[in-house]
Amino acid sequence: MRSIVSYRYSSYFDEIYHARTAYELLKGLPPYDLVHPPLGKWLISVGMAVWGVNPFGWRIVNLIFGSIALVLILILFTKLHKPSFWCGIAIIILMASDFLHNSLSRTANLDTFSLFFILLCSIFGMSYISSILKKKEKLSKTNLAYFLTFSTGGLAFACKWNALYSIIPILTISFSYRVHNLIKIMTKIGL
Image (tube, rainbow, N blue to C red; front, top):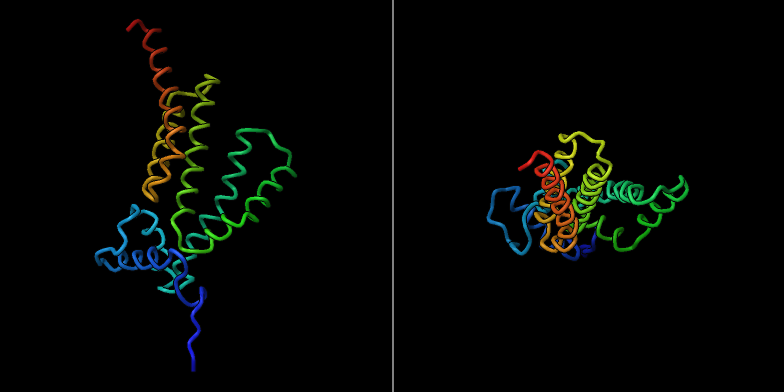
């Protein structure tokens, strides 16, 4: 009897690297793939630890992160604009039907994790900047948003190197607002 080899029963596309490396990290073996940072592969290994070393196990965490990314896109869009309910539904449908997002969310790929953390970094960065501009938030709340902006930016970078291109503008603008705000506070108290 001939065995069937397809994406349903074996690794597909970059899964040959990421799923294998996730398995090796899970078992404490030296990792095969050192091209990208290990956080995304550790997240893939969580699925393997819970659901076994099979295609479902190494793909399920990507599916979860990709599904949550749909909600994060909506949150980010509502921070930029004030859309109607139907506009929000259209945004989620467009993102869910996007072929690249759909493909990457169904395979053990690092791009889904990187996108997830980039979206979080953008949301927290926009929250930080808007709280500084409104001047109504307490300093502890702005500090938390600032900390979360840089933390999620670091997590995006820890998943894949090319996340740096997306997070540099967000981090630079957040840092610039922080420095500007600190200068204003220092001049107000006479330092």
